[in-house]
Image 1: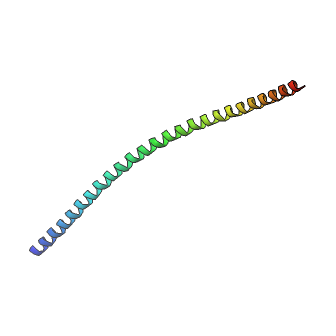
Image 2 (image 1 turned 90 degrees about the vertical axis):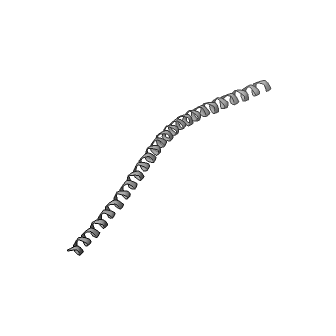
Image 3 (image 1 turned 45 degrees about the horizontal axis):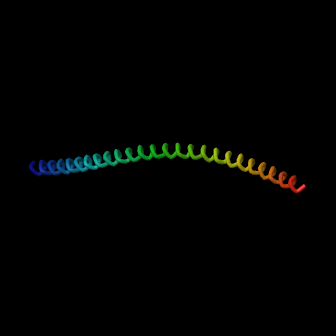
Length: 91
């Protein structure tokens, strides 16, 4: 009878140790999850910030492209006017 009790106590102790180890591992996993969720939140904010920056830069690039085209057109017109003036002064 004592051997059965001792075996049961040993088995109970092993189960308790296994349960305690599982609890420690679960707590560690929860902490890891919280850390990953925080990092995910930071990454999401960074993506939103970078997305806004890209949109702003795209808008500025389009504006600069348009201004460059207008400046090139104006330069061509001025060059043409200059060429006409030079021809007229030679005549």
